[in-house]
Amino acid sequence: MTAVEGVVRAGGGAGAVGRARPSLAARLVARAGGGAVRVFLVLVALFWLMPSVGLLLSSLRSPQRIGESGWWRVFAEPAQITFDNYGRLLSNGKVMGSLLTTAEITVPATVLVVVIGALAGYAFAWMDFAGRDGWFLVVVGLLVVPVQVALIPVAKLFGAVGLFETTAGVILFHTAFGLPFAVFLLRNFFAEIPRELLEAARLDGAGELRLFTRVVLPLGGPAIASLGIFQFLWVWNDMLVALIFADSGSPPITVALQQEVRQFGNNIDVLAPGAFLSMVVPLIVFFAFQRQFVSGVMAGAVK
Image (cartoon, rainbow, N blue to C red; front, top):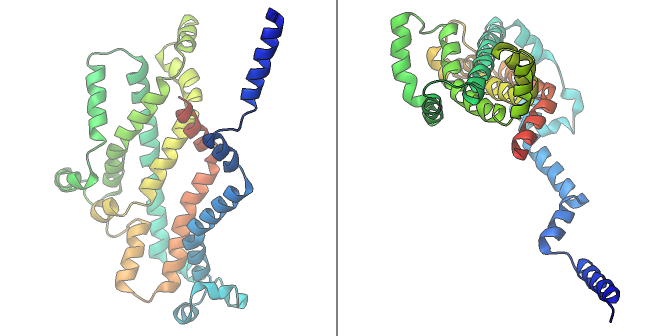
């Protein structure tokens, strides 16, 4: 047998091996993209959205209807849908004012965490200063500190400096506890930026500030968007910190709804639309930045 024939036969043998039955893992991966899995994922998504749909339909029913039957009766009797509850909600000054208070707390707390976290993340990733690694370990250690541990000490501190039961106090609390995660996340993301890009910018005469704004921030957009979404959702949906540190005269929406339940147990015509409205705002923010959020998650997974 010649060498050429040997090579041909070896190739045929390799082809036969290549045409062998795929492994179990390969078959599972192939089936993962099938229709059955997609149907299952759709069902899971519908099941996950069911409480939101139920809250929406309850907010569109009269209090009498809510007391008589469940929200699923809307599908059998769609004529019972009414927007009167939202009219009562808009006329409720306390609940509507609480939405404004929530926005006044959430927006600054989110912006401060993103800005300070981005600056600190860049410093820890690309700037040399004394004790950089030690300070970063301190930041990582702060991630494990629970919020409940700091409630009493921070309350005493805020009372001493006049920040207790103020909007500024709530903003500072959320900013302080959001920064460790922000610095940790953005530092790890910024550290993956190719050094060649930064060196090329420095050769062109770019300083640290211009390097940060022109190179690092555009490349870190997905991670910054992800951080902003997480921080916004956490602050908007918070009740514990707001219940302790916020002004009782103008509380955030979570505390205002809780007070409505405590004072008027049957005030469902205000509670249902108020709860749904407070839930819609985070959903709008999430879907508005969904593409950047997915890009940030995928970039982190690849890196």
